[in-house]
Length: 145
Image (cartoon, rainbow, N blue to C red):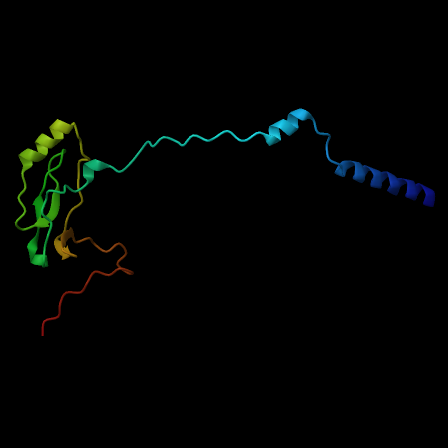
């Protein structure tokens, strides 16, 4: 019985040693491993920012106080587009339409409702409602005494 167990263990040991040896190599596998990988071409760019909704640079949005800011229709290629601008800003709807026709541009129709404007860091910006009133509460009105 001991002899049978020893033979069985010897066979298992021989099988384990045979399984752990490296596979035979050939010249083809050596060449494939030593060859440098082919350079990867960069993917072409296919997107970018959406220019139609960008604020035009020629509109005066400068301010010193909240009273310097008002909501005016600055127009876009779709039509009406209210925006917070300086009280003294000159808006030329004909120039906007001309630019749209010349460039073949279009815009996304529709716009967010602007509740009011404020002066922030010298620029007129729209007052936005709180995203989450429990975390980002709207400012309280000033207390008059």
